[in-house]
Length: 434
Ligand code: HAM
Image 1 (cartoon, rainbow, N blue to C red):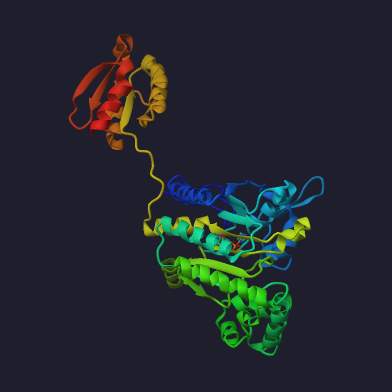
Image 2 (spheres, rainbow, N blue to C red; image 1 turned 120 degrees about the horizontal axis):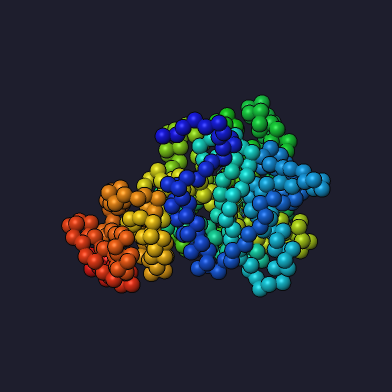
């Protein structure tokens, strides 16, 4: 039971306890298997980056940069920010390390904590983890479809079912400005029917009015012009091609004309993946529906950092949301190693000998439990019983002097003394028989 302590973790930040670790490990394990199969290489970037990287990339007027950054000034006067997402840091590293000269596409994956000063609620934290994929240097919609497929496979390998992929195209610098004008004109004439936040969004980024969750704004939105009808030829072709690829893979997708995403760098494809089962529970619990994965194409971001146009596509899994879903639905996590042998020692000399013996079992890859802090045989056998091991090894003074060890079969209580140099092999042989 939790006890009151003088200190708690900061608001919106959580300890990931030993009992939760197998879920997190499973998410990373499945993600890495898929990433490596598809030729992605791991990259690690610093948790802190220059604040300007996010202001320029993620976008100075986005919620993330405007309201959710954890920033600090170094003693030398640099303004740094705890990363609120991976994409800008990885794009910076791409240029900084000359990856632009490597064979393309350059495919990178990254995992780790990210930080956003959010209003904490279910599925929304101030420190959370992402599993992130980025592909640099590929224009074809085949890559959009393949990365979406990878995230979908990851969730289904983790045993999520009833998944739905929402996709949209938000155009590019050719067609979006005109569409934004149209949209702004439409909403401006209906301003009074919008919530206060949307009135502000109307001035800063009118696209964000489209994904407002307020019912009254959604009523106004229903008649708004849709970007799909105003894409330029290039974006239309790209989007059509993406849908053809998705049809070919049989992925369950849904075209959501209101999906716009809250980061500035996206062009053309944007997507989010939801679990319908989780979303239903969230709805019943009165919280908003949370995406498990989100991402899209960002063909203009790299030019901002490195001066060279490099098309890019990527996305990120919200690891907390996925791990919590797995636990809630009872999906399998990483198997814990269950020891089948216990070592009981009696006295100082046996305890000293035990250290080397334990290491022999480790080298032989036979999981073994012990309780070196306990002295009485009864207490140690009780522990062995609790762990439900098949065998307990008993090492007393006499055994040490004789260079032997006792093997006790736990179900029958039968005991046999064997030479200590043979004990690892004996145990291996017996475990094989079970
Ligand atoms: P994002 O939509 O901001 O995109 O975040 C991706 C995922 O992180 C979300 O779908 C969600 O599962 C999880 N997430 C976001 N905020 C929170 C939070 N406060 N608490 C818990 N989980 C959260 C990006 O970060 C982009 N960088 C993705 C990307 C990569 N686009 C292109 N490449």
